[in-house]
Length: 309
Image 1 (cartoon, rainbow, N blue to C red):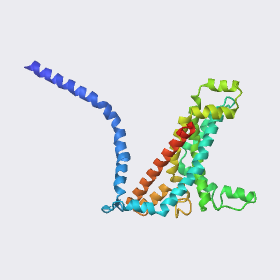
Image 2: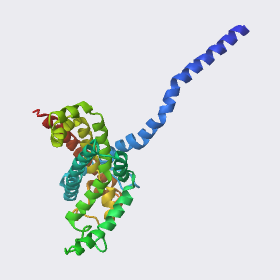
Image 3: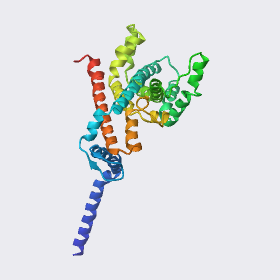
Image 4: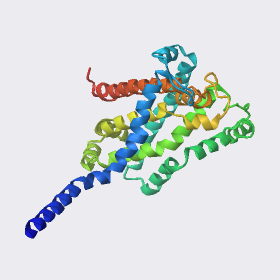
């Protein structure tokens, strides 16, 4: 009888050990999924619910159906903020990607020395606080005592109200974006260039190809997937631009003034006017814009470059 009890106890321990071995991997990866559910999945679901309700953040929610979406379609301030965002994205992202690609190509050339120094120097703005960078640009382009206006006066030009002018404030915000992310994208391109076999370049040089021909006929086609990745990520990040605009123009930002981007408008609606329902609707409008531009980017970067119809 005692032997049977001992055997049952040993069997239970083995079963417990096997069960523990099975769940151990899930325990180790569970923090990621818990954080994803709390800070990723739950906000998405909650914002989807909010978009169909009116809520000031304190009282009960009031279901309003499609009213918020109808308001969004007719909201001229929202569409003007979309226009501001797109202009900032065009004058900031497109030149930045092109410049990052050219710089990566130049650093990758054999005649260039101290490559690690250039890569580190270019990458440093990316790890710098965007708030600190924006404050620095705000001081440089200050309307009263900025370095840019001082230089203009020294050259005999009139002062420019960079922060309050609808056009120039977009250019300043785009400049911050370029300065901060050009090194990051350059590193991605440089990594892709390193994977291109040296034989291709050597054969092209023997055939008498110029640097431009090597760049356009060999480099670009091979790193096309990397270009697509950079364009997609830069587009998604560029359309969500917020901190630069909010730090440069912390108060009285208007869509007509050029500094109100889509995310900044959503922030003002939700957290300054306490209209969380409509703020959530604006966020879903932003999601639709990002999806639309991602599909457009994918089409232009893959189909058109390949010459496919």
